[in-house]
Length: 78
Length: 397
Image 1 (spheres, rainbow over the protein chains, first blue to last red):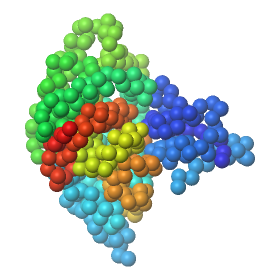
Image 2: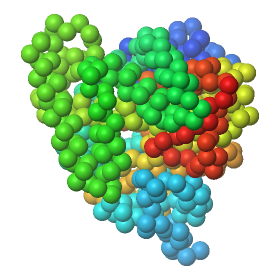
Image 3: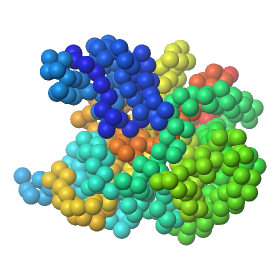
Image 4: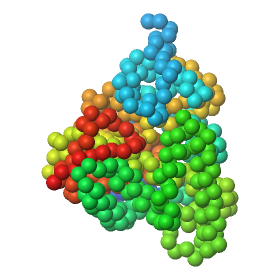
């Protein structure tokens, strides 16, 4: 598990993550999703996994924590 | 393996269509195409390449420079040859136009409409019950609900709602068989919005506190200037056609399925929290928009198939949504399917602007219908799925 983030270049505002895991994702005024500050490490919670698997843009990514946050790697979607 | 097979052309469907009655038996065709020729060419509507695999559709949507929308995402055109804003606009201008209405369609803004939507659904369900034992729920609920809700949101005068159905039927559903009818209705719709905008401008948009979509469009600026009348008309035209009909189709499809599947009906009655999950499954399997078009801006290759610059390309969302590489038992409707990354609202920069509203209406319609109507089944048990037309149900106590 790494640090969760939503790639703003990919997110198109489907809001599936917010519908499935509102405790981790929030939606801004234009409808784009963000990880709620403090919830970056909730990636192993079942609702969050479900949100990741349902994001139509595959925009919820995970930063390798052992890589100083430089390397972003897509979460497995299996 | 022959070259033809490698190019995915062994099962080429030169008569592939995605409109009207062609949809009646489309799901077997989709499976055949997905398995035997996922990219192919149809001669319909001036000729187009079709793309059916979920992955290929996703990739095309993420690459708007290669798969552009101009001249039109609708194939054939929607009763007008004017590019519709924002779906027929390519980057970089596209984002400026889309941004205007994004805040109106966020889940938060949609949830503010919730109580009004529920009240409308309840009233319509009471009318269904009052209409007798055999009722066309398309006419009584699936069509009027989105019309009423969207018209209020957009600011269409209430006395005009009864005429909207004809424009939708003629522009969307007559356009393949009777294009001249669609174009005539398209002119009527354009003239309607021209008059409506005149009235609003006379009243003064700043004085209008209603905050509806038309007011937002009149106030909006793109690159520091107001929208021209032509741009306003184009935006209004698209919102009307996109906002009313797709949701009617989605509600109708959900009720069609539940009417034919008493076990699923019972499951949702016992566990209403499952309704949003079921809605996603209906969206996946019975998508209101089965396909949308693009135009190749450069020569490109999809799954070995060369596509030349200028050629039309149709992304078949309905097929991608039943791709066995993505979904287990893709043709089974499982109302509790939790992994459902479907393409029903499109993706990439043109993702359906109204998806959050459409979903909310669908869920509320199902919730209220299941509460109000203790039992319902199809009047004709063999009735195949259609997104349009009547849906006659036997309503029981």
